[in-house]
Image (cartoon, rainbow, N blue to C red; front, top):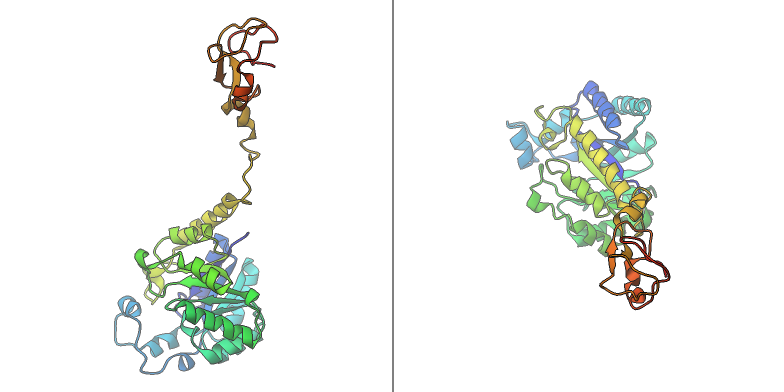
Length: 333
């Protein structure tokens, strides 16, 4: 099964169209399936007095409010259209998370046919109903949530018109970067089993190993933030991959997909030629005369295979040689 890899540009364009276009090119070059942005209006997303998160204050110290920060990071309709055209040119899918009701309408008008619900909206009933009413595939992030909250959100989507089979739930931790001890990757499997949904992982750790591990556990979607340069000023750059790291992550996931295989245990085409070389046969330990009884004293097990399997040892012991055998010669019955 091919993993859907979402390269999360997010707000790492810093409000600059040229940088957003560069991010698309980087995601396409890395081999990601989708490049994802964030669609919002600051006035609809955050109240004027809303504080910034601790990680936002660390990465962007100063008196600027969350609302003011978000205002600088908005993408208008024209920018969305230019980004979508550039995605088509680069051969990568365009994707975006809507953070408010008007932004859902905007993305629907632009023709998006799947939806990404950010972790912060998992308890937003009007929002969930609006997305669920689309009846299209939904990817639901679950940072900061409990199993009960996840199930409640999925049920709202279902009741609004989106079948559970169209919902993929991403295990997620909403801290940037996420400490390794807080990843709790096995929770992804708990979500799968409890909610009976497809699952994936939205990764905010430093590095690429946790995202790769999630694929080995059965993640069907991987989402990872990336940037042009981790030293750029902005809320999310420091917890994002740089271009070479993104490319390495995609390459590693594709290799893991191949390595996971079909789950059936059988000799592979690449190892078939080694079977005879590595396995053993029952051979004469020394010269054996015709009619002599086979015993542990005159038989041995040695490479190569191709003769009688050593699994037939008990069958051979006690029988009489049908002809003369030289030392190391395959035994015949």
